[in-house]
Figure 1: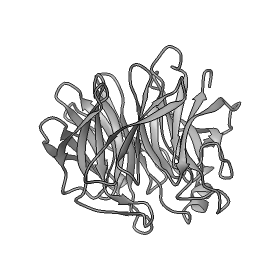
Figure 2: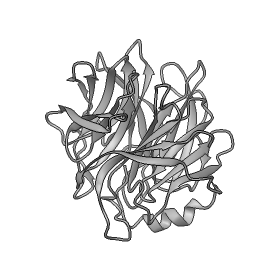
Figure 3: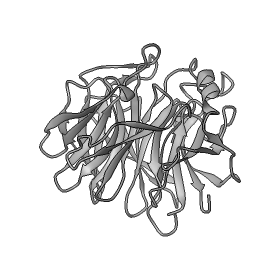
Figure 4: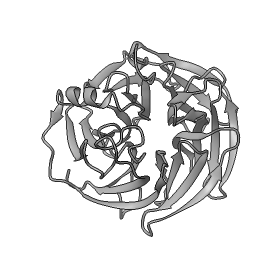
Length: 330
């Protein structure tokens, strides 16, 4: 999530610090697109290859068929005006963060946020718990699928909360200065979050406030077992990201710069893969996810906001869309 045209130039000045030369541009195609004024916030992928995307500005969840290039509205959440982070909790059951964020004024409503579940087979949504202490729930990643625990970033308070999507139990498990919103400007700190696979887990995160990507080792209950560290700094207005299946890279998007980066988890090198400040390829990129079938395992699906927060050249916006990048060999 990104909200400020004024911050774009600063992000560009900072972005060169760890940027590597861009490889050959990957093949790209627009899968689906919505009307002008729409904002796709996040994306998850079902085992059958179908994409589940969340919308900001409207409380909607859509299903996208990347093979047929079709989309359909599958759920609307009552009592909120936007849907944010999403991750698969159990086969075809997804945990989702939702709340009130007004796009026109870029303002959040503290106390309006909640966690929901979606059964993608039946399209039934259920509220798991209200989180009245949250300022702005944003990124979400599954911690323990058996217990029903997820980790959720609070971009307004600079914390990570463990929430049980079945019982509603909540607890702040990480609070660190690296997660905090900036002292001035748009009050968004920690943004997208993803957990590594394997017995020793690392919670990777984007910090919008510091234009950086980092990680922190965590225990089975989500509490930190070591310090929070930045891996790549001064990359830009990073929003959300996908971890590569091999676990070596984060495929990260910079919303205000309209760009897709590949960040090495080992040394922090950020390689520009696609997009540019003046490009309409992925305007206002918001999130990314890898395909899960044999046909699209090398495809990164990138969602966009149509550059609503930072119009290209100050004027151009378009409808939100999903763009597929074949990154085989990159």
